[in-house]
Image 1 (cartoon, one colour):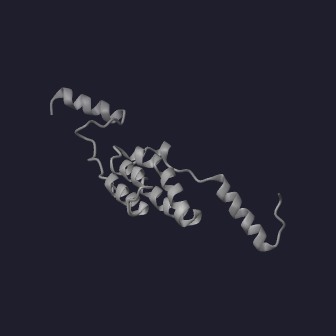
Image 2: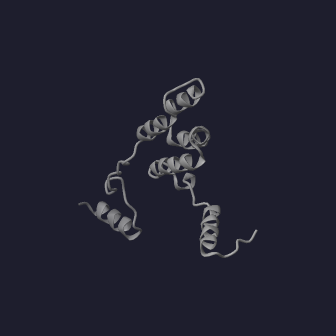
Image 3: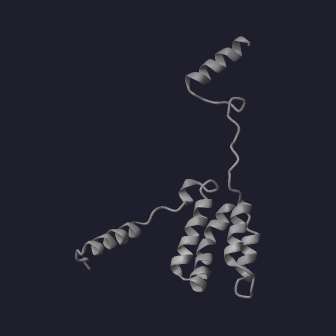
Length: 132
């Protein structure tokens, strides 16, 4: 190792900087965009005139963000066909698939409404009155 390289590596170590040579290999995501796309197409079901546009948009979505924003259309379709409770459960499973594909700012956050609803349900189970 030359004098220059030893000084350089010492300074980089001092400031905790990794170089391209030192960087660990990028981990491959366990879920790919194609996995998400296939899951969404399975949820839509067989293509019909009513679902043709959504199926086409899912098939040709260029990135995970595009698929992420199509969840609302998928939710509307599933809620109409199977009911809102079933649709919400299916979309929660789908949203988990996006965990490795999206930046943290685009992921779902827990709704404060859900915790309030659960708290209200616990009070009615105990016999307490529910404030309105």
